[in-house]
Length: 164
Image 1: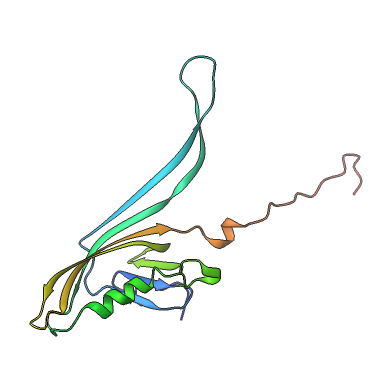
Image 2 (image 1 turned 120 degrees about the horizontal axis):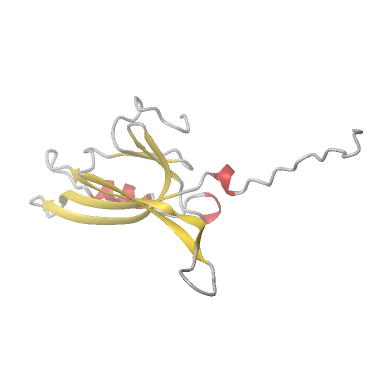
């Protein structure tokens, strides 16, 4: 399987586990998607006036969305689907890290981890099995690995005397 999916491969809202290549596609498109970005600014001491700010770094983007899980037509429990989602939060990545996921939504791709999962079971069958649930997920952006640990570039020094 290709590491990055094309829109034709995953037409729905999809989470792809980049470590195990598992795929979770939502049956219904989310009812809403919210993103939150934040920057950190450092204040510098001055003797008078307003402290000037300089950029320090930025917080990981947070992506929150609500979606429905529904097995009411088949009258089957929704619990196995909830369990699949919960597995995306486990530390099954390399060296005990959370599994890196790729969020695919049309032409939008984001490398993330599943940070929070809220489940509200809203419909039960006659056997008291939950057959419909509303879920809310919060994803946190991950930095690309090659950007996180890239060594500094070394510049070749020229000889000021004109020789090589």
